[in-house]
Image 1 (tube, one colour):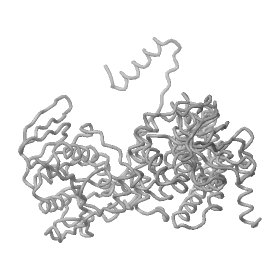
Image 2 (cartoon, rainbow over the protein chains, first blue to last red):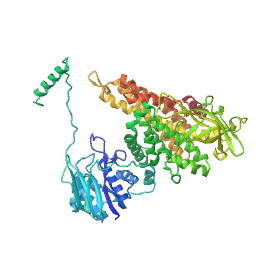
Image 3 (tube, chains in turn cyan, yellow):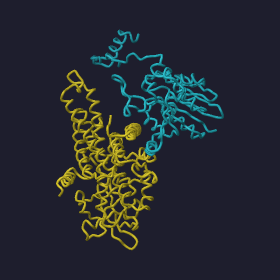
Image 4 (tube, rainbow over the protein chains, first blue to last red):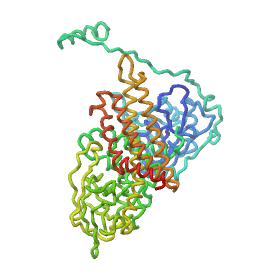
Length: 259
Length: 380
Protein backbone atom coordinates (compact mmCIF):
# COMPACT_ATOMS: atom_id res chain seq x y z
CA UNK A 1 0.00 0.00 0.00
CA UNK A 2 1.64 3.28 -1.06
CA UNK A 3 2.01 5.66 1.87
CA UNK A 4 1.47 9.38 1.97
CA UNK A 5 4.14 10.48 4.43
CA UNK A 6 4.63 14.00 5.72
CA UNK A 7 7.75 15.05 7.57
CA UNK A 8 7.60 18.29 9.55
CA UNK A 9 11.02 19.90 9.49
CA UNK A 10 12.54 23.14 10.73
CA UNK A 11 15.30 25.40 9.50
CA UNK A 12 17.17 26.25 12.68
CA UNK A 13 19.82 28.73 13.73
CA UNK A 14 22.67 26.75 15.24
CA UNK A 15 24.99 29.58 16.24
CA UNK A 16 24.58 30.70 19.83
CA UNK A 17 22.37 33.82 19.74
CA UNK A 18 24.13 36.87 21.18
CA UNK A 19 21.29 39.33 20.66
CA UNK A 20 18.18 39.14 18.48
CA UNK A 21 18.27 36.06 16.26
CA UNK A 22 18.72 37.01 12.61
CA UNK A 23 17.69 34.32 10.17
CA UNK A 24 19.64 34.47 6.91
CA UNK A 25 20.17 31.86 4.22
CA UNK A 26 23.66 31.16 5.60
CA UNK A 27 22.71 31.09 9.26
CA UNK A 28 19.92 28.53 8.86
CA UNK A 29 20.29 24.81 8.46
CA UNK A 30 18.10 21.75 8.67
CA UNK A 31 17.48 20.76 12.28
CA UNK A 32 19.79 17.82 12.93
CA UNK A 33 17.06 16.01 14.90
CA UNK A 34 14.83 16.08 11.79
CA UNK A 35 17.30 14.06 9.73
CA UNK A 36 16.39 10.67 11.28
CA UNK A 37 12.69 11.49 10.69
CA UNK A 38 13.34 12.32 7.03
CA UNK A 39 15.46 9.19 6.64
CA UNK A 40 12.72 7.06 8.20
CA UNK A 41 10.22 8.55 5.75
CA UNK A 42 12.47 7.78 2.77
CA UNK A 43 12.95 4.19 3.97
CA UNK A 44 9.19 3.75 4.41
CA UNK A 45 8.69 4.99 0.85
CA UNK A 46 11.35 2.58 -0.40
CA UNK A 47 9.49 -0.30 1.26
CA UNK A 48 5.89 0.64 0.53
CA UNK A 49 6.01 3.16 -2.29
CA UNK A 50 4.15 6.44 -2.01
CA UNK A 51 5.22 10.00 -1.50
CA UNK A 52 7.25 11.98 1.01
CA UNK A 53 6.31 15.62 1.58
CA UNK A 54 8.38 17.90 3.78
CA UNK A 55 6.46 20.65 5.55
CA UNK A 56 7.91 23.58 7.43
CA UNK A 57 6.88 26.86 9.03
CA UNK A 58 9.54 29.50 8.63
CA UNK A 59 10.78 32.62 6.88
CA UNK A 60 11.44 32.63 3.10
CA UNK A 61 15.15 32.21 3.91
CA UNK A 62 14.32 28.64 4.95
CA UNK A 63 13.61 27.68 1.34
CA UNK A 64 17.13 26.35 0.57
CA UNK A 65 16.85 24.06 3.59
CA UNK A 66 13.68 22.56 2.10
CA UNK A 67 15.49 22.15 -1.20
CA UNK A 68 18.17 20.20 0.67
CA UNK A 69 15.38 17.90 1.89
CA UNK A 70 14.28 17.49 -1.74
CA UNK A 71 17.91 16.73 -2.65
CA UNK A 72 17.94 14.06 0.03
CA UNK A 73 14.95 12.42 -1.65
CA UNK A 74 11.68 14.07 -0.63
CA UNK A 75 9.12 14.39 -3.43
CA UNK A 76 7.40 17.61 -2.46
CA UNK A 77 8.25 20.57 -0.22
CA UNK A 78 5.82 23.04 1.34
CA UNK A 79 6.92 26.11 3.27
CA UNK A 80 4.32 27.98 5.27
CA UNK A 81 5.72 31.47 5.32
CA UNK A 82 3.92 34.57 6.44
CA UNK A 83 5.05 37.70 8.29
CA UNK A 84 2.09 37.14 10.63
CA UNK A 85 3.69 33.89 11.79
CA UNK A 86 6.84 35.60 13.11
CA UNK A 87 7.41 34.92 16.78
CA UNK A 88 5.24 31.79 16.90
CA UNK A 89 5.74 29.70 20.02
CA UNK A 90 5.30 25.94 19.94
CA UNK A 91 1.49 26.08 20.15
CA UNK A 92 1.16 28.69 17.41
CA UNK A 93 3.59 26.66 15.29
CA UNK A 94 1.52 23.53 15.91
CA UNK A 95 -1.64 25.44 14.90
CA UNK A 96 -0.08 26.41 11.59
CA UNK A 97 1.35 22.93 10.94
CA UNK A 98 -1.97 21.26 11.79
CA UNK A 99 -3.80 23.55 9.37
CA UNK A 100 -1.24 22.74 6.67
CA UNK A 101 -1.54 19.01 7.40
CA UNK A 102 -5.32 19.25 6.97
CA UNK A 103 -4.69 20.80 3.56
CA UNK A 104 -2.29 17.96 2.71
CA UNK A 105 -4.73 15.26 3.92
CA UNK A 106 -5.32 12.41 3.44
CA UNK A 107 -2.00 11.17 4.84
CA UNK A 108 -0.90 8.01 6.58
CA UNK A 109 2.14 8.95 8.62
CA UNK A 110 3.36 12.28 10.01
CA UNK A 111 6.93 12.35 11.28
CA UNK A 112 8.82 14.84 13.42
CA UNK A 113 12.26 15.01 14.98
CA UNK A 114 12.18 14.55 18.75
CA UNK A 115 13.12 18.21 19.22
CA UNK A 116 14.98 21.06 17.56
CA UNK A 117 18.57 21.99 18.16
CA UNK A 118 17.71 25.68 18.60
CA UNK A 119 14.67 26.03 20.86
CA UNK A 120 14.84 22.45 22.10
CA UNK A 121 11.31 22.04 23.47
CA UNK A 122 10.19 18.76 21.93
CA UNK A 123 6.61 20.03 22.04
CA UNK A 124 5.66 20.72 18.44
CA UNK A 125 5.21 17.08 17.38
CA UNK A 126 2.84 16.08 20.20
CA UNK A 127 1.01 19.43 20.08
CA UNK A 128 0.38 19.17 16.33
CA UNK A 129 -0.89 15.60 16.66
CA UNK A 130 -3.18 16.63 19.52
CA UNK A 131 -4.68 19.46 17.47
CA UNK A 132 -5.14 17.02 14.57
CA UNK A 133 -6.70 14.51 16.98
CA UNK A 134 -4.47 11.67 15.78
CA UNK A 135 -2.38 9.30 17.93
CA UNK A 136 1.24 10.27 18.63
CA UNK A 137 4.17 8.20 19.84
CA UNK A 138 7.40 9.95 20.79
CA UNK A 139 11.00 8.75 20.64
CA UNK A 140 10.44 6.02 18.06
CA UNK A 141 13.45 3.93 17.10
CA UNK A 142 11.68 1.51 14.74
CA UNK A 143 8.61 1.98 12.62
CA UNK A 144 7.02 -0.81 10.57
CA UNK A 145 3.82 -0.29 8.64
CA UNK A 146 1.38 -2.97 7.50
CA UNK A 147 -2.15 -2.43 6.20
CA UNK A 148 -3.53 0.55 8.11
CA UNK A 149 -1.47 -0.11 11.22
CA UNK A 150 2.01 0.66 12.45
CA UNK A 151 4.10 -1.31 14.88
CA UNK A 152 6.53 0.98 16.58
CA UNK A 153 9.33 0.58 19.09
CA UNK A 154 10.24 3.46 21.31
CA UNK A 155 13.20 3.87 23.54
CA UNK A 156 13.00 5.17 27.09
CA UNK A 157 15.86 5.41 29.55
CA UNK A 158 15.82 1.76 30.61
CA UNK A 159 12.84 0.46 28.69
CA UNK A 160 11.96 -0.53 25.18
CA UNK A 161 8.24 -0.25 24.49
CA UNK A 162 6.43 -1.73 21.50
CA UNK A 163 3.11 -0.30 20.36
CA UNK A 164 0.57 -1.06 17.68
CA UNK A 165 -1.25 2.01 16.46
CA UNK A 166 -3.86 2.74 13.82
CA UNK A 167 -2.97 5.11 11.02
CA UNK A 168 -3.00 7.97 10.39
CA UNK A 169 -0.70 8.69 13.29
CA UNK A 170 2.20 10.94 14.20
CA UNK A 171 5.61 9.85 15.43
CA UNK A 172 8.68 11.66 16.65
CA UNK A 173 11.78 9.76 15.59
CA UNK A 174 14.56 9.17 18.10
CA UNK A 175 18.03 10.37 16.97
CA UNK A 176 19.14 6.73 17.04
CA UNK A 177 16.13 5.71 14.93
CA UNK A 178 17.91 6.07 11.61
CA UNK A 179 21.25 7.27 10.31
CA UNK A 180 20.45 9.75 7.59
CA UNK A 181 21.86 9.28 4.11
CA UNK A 182 24.36 11.78 2.72
CA UNK A 183 22.96 14.29 0.28
CA UNK A 184 24.38 13.88 -3.21
CA UNK A 185 25.56 16.65 -5.49
CA UNK A 186 23.25 15.45 -8.29
CA UNK A 187 20.28 15.76 -5.96
CA UNK A 188 21.31 19.28 -4.94
CA UNK A 189 21.77 20.33 -8.55
CA UNK A 190 18.34 18.98 -9.49
CA UNK A 191 16.65 20.50 -6.43
CA UNK A 192 18.03 23.97 -7.10
CA UNK A 193 17.77 23.94 -10.89
CA UNK A 194 14.43 22.24 -11.39
CA UNK A 195 12.40 21.72 -8.21
CA UNK A 196 10.18 24.25 -6.50
CA UNK A 197 9.21 24.77 -2.89
CA UNK A 198 5.51 25.56 -2.58
CA UNK A 199 4.90 28.60 -0.45
CA UNK A 200 1.67 28.88 1.54
CA UNK A 201 0.45 31.84 3.55
CA UNK A 202 -1.61 31.79 6.73
CA UNK A 203 -4.65 32.80 4.68
CA UNK A 204 -4.06 29.82 2.36
CA UNK A 205 -4.49 27.62 5.44
CA UNK A 206 -7.73 29.27 6.49
CA UNK A 207 -6.12 30.75 9.60
CA UNK A 208 -6.28 34.32 10.83
CA UNK A 209 -3.22 36.21 12.12
CA UNK A 210 -4.51 35.99 15.72
CA UNK A 211 -3.97 32.20 15.65
CA UNK A 212 -0.26 32.35 14.86
CA UNK A 213 2.84 34.47 15.47
CA UNK A 214 3.19 36.64 18.55
CA UNK A 215 -0.58 37.13 18.67
CA UNK A 216 -1.31 33.40 18.76
CA UNK A 217 1.44 32.49 21.23
CA UNK A 218 0.56 32.07 24.90
CA UNK A 219 4.25 31.94 25.90
CA UNK A 220 6.93 34.62 25.63
CA UNK A 221 10.69 34.26 25.85
CA UNK A 222 11.63 37.22 28.05
CA UNK A 223 15.38 36.83 27.99
CA UNK A 224 18.15 34.44 27.15
CA UNK A 225 21.53 34.30 28.83
CA UNK A 226 24.44 31.96 28.54
CA UNK A 227 25.25 30.01 31.67
CA UNK A 228 28.57 31.00 33.16
CA UNK A 229 30.33 28.15 34.88
CA UNK A 230 32.78 29.16 37.54
CA UNK A 231 35.06 26.16 37.71
CA UNK A 232 38.40 26.03 39.42
CA UNK A 233 41.11 23.46 39.14
CA UNK A 234 42.52 22.23 42.46
CA UNK A 235 45.85 20.49 42.76
CA UNK A 236 46.69 17.73 45.19
CA UNK A 237 50.34 17.92 46.08
CA UNK A 238 50.80 14.75 48.17
CA UNK A 239 53.70 12.60 47.01
CA UNK A 240 52.37 9.05 47.12
CA UNK A 241 49.28 7.85 45.20
CA UNK A 242 47.75 6.54 48.45
CA UNK A 243 48.19 9.94 50.10
CA UNK A 244 46.75 11.64 47.03
CA UNK A 245 43.70 9.35 47.18
CA UNK A 246 43.26 10.05 50.91
CA UNK A 247 43.52 13.78 50.31
CA UNK A 248 41.01 13.58 47.43
CA UNK A 249 38.55 11.63 49.63
CA UNK A 250 38.98 14.13 52.46
CA UNK A 251 38.14 17.03 50.17
CA UNK A 252 35.16 15.25 48.61
CA UNK A 253 33.79 14.39 52.06
CA UNK A 254 34.34 17.96 53.24
CA UNK A 255 32.48 19.26 50.20
CA UNK A 256 29.62 16.94 51.05
CA UNK A 257 29.91 15.12 47.72
CA UNK A 258 30.55 11.67 49.24
CA UNK A 259 30.31 10.12 52.69
CA UNK B 1 26.48 36.93 4.72
CA UNK B 2 28.19 36.14 1.49
CA UNK B 3 27.45 38.56 -1.33
CA UNK B 4 28.75 36.39 -4.17
CA UNK B 5 27.06 33.10 -3.45
CA UNK B 6 23.57 32.16 -4.50
CA UNK B 7 21.33 30.02 -2.32
CA UNK B 8 22.41 26.98 -4.28
CA UNK B 9 26.07 27.58 -3.49
CA UNK B 10 25.35 28.18 0.17
CA UNK B 11 23.46 24.89 0.31
CA UNK B 12 26.27 23.10 -1.51
CA UNK B 13 28.81 24.40 1.00
CA UNK B 14 26.60 23.42 3.92
CA UNK B 15 25.92 19.94 2.55
CA UNK B 16 29.50 19.21 1.55
CA UNK B 17 30.75 20.46 4.92
CA UNK B 18 28.32 18.14 6.71
CA UNK B 19 29.58 15.21 4.62
CA UNK B 20 33.22 16.12 5.27
CA UNK B 21 32.72 16.52 9.01
CA UNK B 22 30.91 13.21 9.29
CA UNK B 23 32.82 11.01 6.85
CA UNK B 24 36.30 12.45 6.26
CA UNK B 25 37.34 14.46 9.32
CA UNK B 26 37.33 11.46 11.67
CA UNK B 27 39.94 9.68 9.52
CA UNK B 28 41.88 12.68 8.15
CA UNK B 29 44.70 12.52 10.70
CA UNK B 30 44.99 8.74 10.58
CA UNK B 31 45.19 8.48 6.78
CA UNK B 32 47.96 11.08 6.82
CA UNK B 33 49.94 9.18 9.46
CA UNK B 34 49.45 5.88 7.66
CA UNK B 35 49.94 7.42 4.19
CA UNK B 36 46.83 5.49 3.17
CA UNK B 37 44.28 6.45 0.53
CA UNK B 38 40.83 6.33 2.16
CA UNK B 39 38.91 4.03 -0.18
CA UNK B 40 36.14 3.78 2.40
CA UNK B 41 35.55 7.51 1.89
CA UNK B 42 36.06 7.49 -1.89
CA UNK B 43 33.52 4.67 -2.26
CA UNK B 44 30.93 6.87 -0.55
CA UNK B 45 31.88 9.93 -2.58
CA UNK B 46 31.43 8.25 -5.95
CA UNK B 47 27.63 7.78 -5.90
CA UNK B 48 27.25 11.25 -4.37
CA UNK B 49 28.80 12.90 -7.43
CA UNK B 50 32.13 14.15 -6.04
CA UNK B 51 34.07 12.57 -8.90
CA UNK B 52 31.96 14.19 -11.60
CA UNK B 53 31.26 17.64 -10.19
CA UNK B 54 31.09 19.44 -13.54
CA UNK B 55 30.33 16.46 -15.73
CA UNK B 56 26.94 16.84 -17.47
CA UNK B 57 24.12 14.91 -15.83
CA UNK B 58 23.50 12.90 -19.00
CA UNK B 59 26.98 11.42 -18.47
CA UNK B 60 26.25 10.64 -14.84
CA UNK B 61 27.84 13.73 -13.32
CA UNK B 62 26.42 16.42 -11.06
CA UNK B 63 26.48 19.09 -13.78
CA UNK B 64 27.48 21.88 -11.41
CA UNK B 65 29.25 25.15 -12.22
CA UNK B 66 32.84 26.20 -11.53
CA UNK B 67 31.91 28.17 -8.43
CA UNK B 68 30.33 25.05 -6.94
CA UNK B 69 33.46 23.13 -7.90
CA UNK B 70 35.68 25.65 -6.08
CA UNK B 71 33.48 25.50 -2.98
CA UNK B 72 33.51 21.69 -2.94
CA UNK B 73 37.30 21.46 -3.32
CA UNK B 74 37.70 24.08 -0.59
CA UNK B 75 35.48 22.15 1.80
CA UNK B 76 37.13 18.79 1.10
CA UNK B 77 40.55 20.37 1.61
CA UNK B 78 39.39 21.99 4.83
CA UNK B 79 39.27 18.52 6.38
CA UNK B 80 41.82 16.67 4.24
CA UNK B 81 44.18 18.29 1.74
CA UNK B 82 44.96 14.86 0.33
CA UNK B 83 41.33 14.01 -0.43
CA UNK B 84 40.80 17.50 -1.87
CA UNK B 85 43.84 16.92 -4.07
CA UNK B 86 42.55 13.59 -5.39
CA UNK B 87 39.17 15.06 -6.29
CA UNK B 88 40.63 18.26 -7.71
CA UNK B 89 43.05 16.51 -10.05
CA UNK B 90 40.47 13.94 -11.09
CA UNK B 91 37.88 16.61 -11.95
CA UNK B 92 39.99 19.44 -13.27
CA UNK B 93 42.98 18.11 -15.15
CA UNK B 94 41.55 14.74 -16.18
CA UNK B 95 37.80 15.09 -16.69
CA UNK B 96 37.85 18.68 -17.91
CA UNK B 97 40.21 18.05 -20.88
CA UNK B 98 38.41 14.78 -21.60
CA UNK B 99 35.09 16.62 -21.86
CA UNK B 100 36.56 19.58 -23.74
CA UNK B 101 38.68 17.66 -26.27
CA UNK B 102 37.41 14.08 -26.16
CA UNK B 103 35.26 12.32 -28.76
CA UNK B 104 31.71 11.30 -27.89
CA UNK B 105 32.88 7.72 -27.55
CA UNK B 106 35.72 8.71 -25.19
CA UNK B 107 33.32 10.74 -23.07
CA UNK B 108 30.91 7.84 -22.92
CA UNK B 109 33.55 5.20 -22.13
CA UNK B 110 35.88 7.03 -19.78
CA UNK B 111 33.85 10.10 -18.79
CA UNK B 112 30.98 8.11 -17.37
CA UNK B 113 33.17 5.77 -15.31
CA UNK B 114 35.31 8.66 -14.06
CA UNK B 115 32.25 10.75 -13.18
CA UNK B 116 30.94 8.01 -10.89
CA UNK B 117 34.32 7.43 -9.30
CA UNK B 118 34.35 3.87 -10.61
CA UNK B 119 37.66 4.79 -12.17
CA UNK B 120 40.19 7.32 -10.93
CA UNK B 121 42.06 9.65 -13.24
CA UNK B 122 45.62 10.98 -13.33
CA UNK B 123 47.37 13.69 -15.35
CA UNK B 124 50.84 12.63 -16.41
CA UNK B 125 52.92 15.53 -17.62
CA UNK B 126 55.91 15.85 -15.30
CA UNK B 127 59.07 13.90 -16.12
CA UNK B 128 62.54 13.89 -14.56
CA UNK B 129 63.58 16.51 -17.16
CA UNK B 130 60.27 18.26 -17.81
CA UNK B 131 57.97 20.07 -15.44
CA UNK B 132 57.83 23.85 -15.49
CA UNK B 133 59.24 23.49 -19.01
CA UNK B 134 56.45 21.30 -20.36
CA UNK B 135 57.88 21.45 -23.89
CA UNK B 136 60.85 19.40 -22.69
CA UNK B 137 58.80 16.19 -22.56
CA UNK B 138 60.73 13.10 -23.65
CA UNK B 139 57.96 10.49 -23.52
CA UNK B 140 56.99 9.09 -26.91
CA UNK B 141 53.78 7.79 -28.43
CA UNK B 142 54.77 6.48 -31.81
CA UNK B 143 52.03 5.60 -34.24
CA UNK B 144 52.11 2.11 -35.68
CA UNK B 145 49.46 0.65 -37.97
CA UNK B 146 46.60 0.35 -35.49
CA UNK B 147 48.11 1.57 -32.23
CA UNK B 148 50.43 3.95 -30.43
CA UNK B 149 53.51 2.54 -28.78
CA UNK B 150 53.98 4.45 -25.55
CA UNK B 151 57.26 4.83 -23.69
CA UNK B 152 57.30 7.20 -20.76
CA UNK B 153 58.70 7.87 -17.33
CA UNK B 154 56.19 10.12 -15.58
CA UNK B 155 57.00 11.24 -12.06
CA UNK B 156 55.12 12.84 -9.16
CA UNK B 157 51.82 11.63 -10.56
CA UNK B 158 49.03 12.66 -8.19
CA UNK B 159 46.63 9.70 -7.73
CA UNK B 160 49.35 7.59 -9.44
CA UNK B 161 48.96 4.62 -7.13
CA UNK B 162 45.19 4.38 -7.66
CA UNK B 163 44.67 5.76 -11.15
CA UNK B 164 42.93 3.71 -13.83
CA UNK B 165 42.87 6.27 -16.61
CA UNK B 166 46.01 8.34 -17.24
CA UNK B 167 46.41 11.24 -19.62
CA UNK B 168 49.94 10.79 -20.93
CA UNK B 169 51.70 13.76 -22.50
CA UNK B 170 54.04 12.31 -25.09
CA UNK B 171 55.70 13.12 -28.39
CA UNK B 172 53.83 11.71 -31.34
CA UNK B 173 56.30 13.51 -33.59
CA UNK B 174 59.75 13.61 -31.99
CA UNK B 175 61.04 16.12 -34.54
CA UNK B 176 58.25 18.68 -34.28
CA UNK B 177 59.35 20.40 -31.04
CA UNK B 178 56.49 21.57 -28.85
CA UNK B 179 54.08 21.01 -31.73
CA UNK B 180 54.86 17.31 -31.64
CA UNK B 181 53.36 16.74 -28.20
CA UNK B 182 49.99 14.95 -27.90
CA UNK B 183 47.82 13.49 -25.16
CA UNK B 184 47.21 9.75 -25.29
CA UNK B 185 45.19 7.84 -22.72
CA UNK B 186 46.81 4.84 -21.08
CA UNK B 187 44.76 2.56 -18.88
CA UNK B 188 46.11 0.66 -15.92
CA UNK B 189 46.29 -3.02 -16.70
CA UNK B 190 47.62 -2.51 -20.20
CA UNK B 191 50.77 -4.57 -20.78
CA UNK B 192 53.80 -2.40 -20.09
CA UNK B 193 51.92 -0.04 -17.72
CA UNK B 194 53.89 0.01 -14.47
CA UNK B 195 53.08 1.94 -11.31
CA UNK B 196 56.30 2.94 -9.55
CA UNK B 197 56.89 3.18 -5.81
CA UNK B 198 54.79 5.67 -3.89
CA UNK B 199 56.62 8.88 -3.04
CA UNK B 200 57.39 9.44 0.64
CA UNK B 201 56.24 13.03 0.72
CA UNK B 202 56.27 15.83 3.28
CA UNK B 203 52.52 16.47 3.06
CA UNK B 204 49.40 15.27 1.24
CA UNK B 205 50.49 11.86 2.43
CA UNK B 206 47.12 10.18 1.99
CA UNK B 207 47.34 10.77 -1.75
CA UNK B 208 49.28 7.97 -3.45
CA UNK B 209 51.65 10.07 -5.54
CA UNK B 210 53.87 7.80 -7.61
CA UNK B 211 55.74 7.49 -10.85
CA UNK B 212 54.07 5.84 -13.82
CA UNK B 213 56.26 4.12 -16.34
CA UNK B 214 55.20 2.86 -19.70
CA UNK B 215 57.35 0.28 -21.47
CA UNK B 216 56.33 -0.39 -25.07
CA UNK B 217 52.76 0.02 -23.97
CA UNK B 218 50.39 -0.50 -26.91
CA UNK B 219 47.17 1.51 -26.90
CA UNK B 220 44.59 1.86 -29.72
CA UNK B 221 44.78 4.93 -31.96
CA UNK B 222 41.35 5.88 -30.60
CA UNK B 223 43.06 6.67 -27.27
CA UNK B 224 44.38 9.93 -28.73
CA UNK B 225 42.72 12.91 -27.04
CA UNK B 226 41.97 15.72 -29.49
CA UNK B 227 44.39 15.80 -32.38
CA UNK B 228 48.06 14.97 -32.70
CA UNK B 229 50.20 17.96 -31.77
CA UNK B 230 47.46 19.48 -29.60
CA UNK B 231 49.08 18.27 -26.38
CA UNK B 232 50.36 21.53 -25.00
CA UNK B 233 47.11 23.32 -25.82
CA UNK B 234 45.17 20.63 -23.97
CA UNK B 235 47.65 20.82 -21.13
CA UNK B 236 47.36 24.59 -20.79
CA UNK B 237 43.55 24.46 -20.89
CA UNK B 238 43.58 21.75 -18.24
CA UNK B 239 45.99 23.70 -16.07
CA UNK B 240 43.85 26.85 -16.21
CA UNK B 241 41.08 24.85 -14.60
CA UNK B 242 43.53 22.95 -12.43
CA UNK B 243 44.91 26.18 -11.01
CA UNK B 244 41.51 27.11 -9.74
CA UNK B 245 41.24 23.74 -8.02
CA UNK B 246 44.61 24.10 -6.31
CA UNK B 247 43.78 27.67 -5.32
CA UNK B 248 40.52 26.45 -3.77
CA UNK B 249 42.43 23.70 -2.05
CA UNK B 250 44.88 26.23 -0.58
CA UNK B 251 41.93 28.29 0.69
CA UNK B 252 40.46 25.20 2.36
CA UNK B 253 43.71 24.30 4.11
CA UNK B 254 44.20 27.92 5.24
CA UNK B 255 40.61 28.10 6.49
CA UNK B 256 41.12 24.96 8.57
CA UNK B 257 44.33 26.38 10.04
CA UNK B 258 42.59 29.65 10.88
CA UNK B 259 39.75 27.84 12.64
CA UNK B 260 42.15 25.71 14.67
CA UNK B 261 44.19 28.76 15.63
CA UNK B 262 41.09 30.67 16.73
CA UNK B 263 39.89 27.75 18.81
CA UNK B 264 43.28 27.16 20.42
CA UNK B 265 43.79 30.86 21.17
CA UNK B 266 40.52 30.84 23.07
CA UNK B 267 41.54 27.85 25.19
CA UNK B 268 45.24 28.26 25.85
CA UNK B 269 45.94 30.45 28.87
CA UNK B 270 49.18 32.30 29.48
CA UNK B 271 49.83 35.20 31.87
CA UNK B 272 46.43 34.57 33.42
CA UNK B 273 44.29 35.06 30.31
CA UNK B 274 43.44 33.12 27.14
CA UNK B 275 46.14 33.97 24.61
CA UNK B 276 43.43 35.42 22.31
CA UNK B 277 43.50 38.41 24.68
CA UNK B 278 47.13 39.13 23.83
CA UNK B 279 47.56 41.73 21.15
CA UNK B 280 50.30 39.82 19.39
CA UNK B 281 47.99 36.82 18.87
CA UNK B 282 45.12 39.07 17.79
CA UNK B 283 47.35 40.62 15.11
CA UNK B 284 48.21 37.16 13.82
CA UNK B 285 44.56 36.12 13.71
CA UNK B 286 43.66 39.34 11.87
CA UNK B 287 46.34 38.72 9.26
CA UNK B 288 45.30 35.10 8.83
CA UNK B 289 41.60 35.94 8.39
CA UNK B 290 42.40 38.68 5.87
CA UNK B 291 44.65 36.40 3.82
CA UNK B 292 42.01 33.65 3.73
CA UNK B 293 39.28 36.08 2.78
CA UNK B 294 41.25 37.71 -0.02
CA UNK B 295 42.34 34.34 -1.41
CA UNK B 296 38.78 33.04 -1.36
CA UNK B 297 37.45 36.09 -3.18
CA UNK B 298 40.11 35.68 -5.88
CA UNK B 299 39.14 32.04 -6.37
CA UNK B 300 35.45 32.91 -6.56
CA UNK B 301 36.13 35.63 -9.12
CA UNK B 302 38.07 33.28 -11.39
CA UNK B 303 35.29 30.71 -11.08
CA UNK B 304 32.56 33.27 -11.79
CA UNK B 305 34.41 34.45 -14.89
CA UNK B 306 34.68 30.88 -16.13
CA UNK B 307 30.99 30.27 -15.44
CA UNK B 308 30.12 33.34 -17.51
CA UNK B 309 32.25 32.10 -20.41
CA UNK B 310 34.73 34.97 -20.01
CA UNK B 311 38.54 34.71 -20.11
CA UNK B 312 39.77 33.63 -16.66
CA UNK B 313 43.30 32.39 -17.22
CA UNK B 314 45.04 35.43 -15.73
CA UNK B 315 42.65 35.59 -12.77
CA UNK B 316 43.05 31.84 -12.12
CA UNK B 317 46.82 32.22 -12.18
CA UNK B 318 46.66 35.15 -9.73
CA UNK B 319 44.28 33.23 -7.49
CA UNK B 320 46.56 30.18 -7.46
CA UNK B 321 49.66 32.26 -6.72
CA UNK B 322 48.03 34.29 -3.98
CA UNK B 323 46.06 31.47 -2.36
CA UNK B 324 49.00 29.06 -2.20
CA UNK B 325 51.30 31.72 -0.74
CA UNK B 326 48.53 32.69 1.70
CA UNK B 327 48.04 29.05 2.74
CA UNK B 328 51.73 28.79 3.62
CA UNK B 329 51.65 32.04 5.62
CA UNK B 330 48.41 31.17 7.40
CA UNK B 331 49.41 27.61 8.32
CA UNK B 332 52.78 28.92 9.52
CA UNK B 333 51.02 31.45 11.76
CA UNK B 334 48.61 28.76 12.99
CA UNK B 335 51.61 26.67 14.10
CA UNK B 336 53.03 29.78 15.78
CA UNK B 337 49.79 30.43 17.67
CA UNK B 338 49.93 26.83 18.92
CA UNK B 339 53.57 27.20 20.03
CA UNK B 340 55.26 23.86 20.73
CA UNK B 341 51.97 22.01 20.37
CA UNK B 342 51.68 23.21 16.78
CA UNK B 343 54.90 21.38 16.02
CA UNK B 344 53.45 18.14 17.34
CA UNK B 345 51.56 15.60 15.27
CA UNK B 346 48.97 15.57 18.04
CA UNK B 347 47.58 18.82 16.61
CA UNK B 348 46.04 19.14 13.14
CA UNK B 349 47.88 22.38 12.30
CA UNK B 350 51.08 20.38 11.93
CA UNK B 351 49.43 18.50 9.03
CA UNK B 352 48.01 21.66 7.50
CA UNK B 353 51.49 23.23 7.60
CA UNK B 354 52.95 20.28 5.66
CA UNK B 355 50.00 20.01 3.27
CA UNK B 356 50.04 23.72 2.38
CA UNK B 357 53.65 23.72 1.23
CA UNK B 358 53.14 21.82 -2.01
CA UNK B 359 50.38 24.15 -3.21
CA UNK B 360 53.18 26.58 -4.12
CA UNK B 361 54.85 23.89 -6.21
CA UNK B 362 52.40 21.73 -8.11
CA UNK B 363 50.24 22.58 -11.10
CA UNK B 364 52.75 25.33 -11.79
CA UNK B 365 55.15 26.74 -9.20
CA UNK B 366 54.65 30.23 -7.79
CA UNK B 367 57.53 31.32 -10.01
CA UNK B 368 55.92 29.95 -13.18
CA UNK B 369 52.69 31.67 -12.15
CA UNK B 370 54.54 34.97 -11.80
CA UNK B 371 55.92 34.46 -15.31
CA UNK B 372 52.40 33.81 -16.61
CA UNK B 373 50.92 36.78 -14.77
CA UNK B 374 53.71 39.15 -15.83
CA UNK B 375 53.20 38.14 -19.44
CA UNK B 376 49.51 38.89 -19.05
CA UNK B 377 50.22 42.30 -17.56
CA UNK B 378 53.04 43.31 -19.88
CA UNK B 379 51.61 41.68 -22.97
CA UNK B 380 54.89 39.95 -23.84
